[in-house]
Image (tube, rainbow, N blue to C red; front, side, top):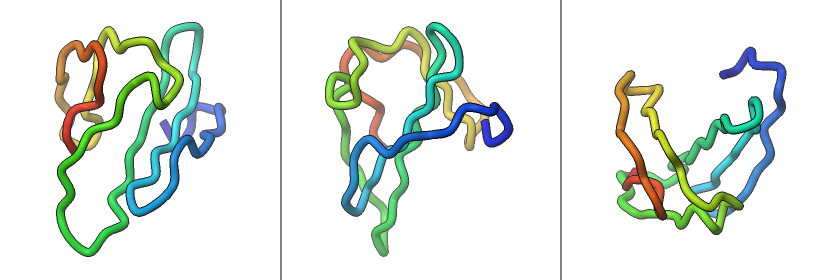
Length: 76
């Protein structure tokens, strides 16, 4: 991801900022960052990030497929 040649754009701010980058016609990288002192459980609507849905979601940090998510990002 860091070498894709497609710069990211900050979508949301606050203590859990979300960055996204378009990497092709239907491929996007979406990265939430937890800047709090502890763990955080929450969700974000895809529509808040400018997407209608997500056909496939992959946790690149955990190296596993999370499947399809229609309306929200999985809890992070």
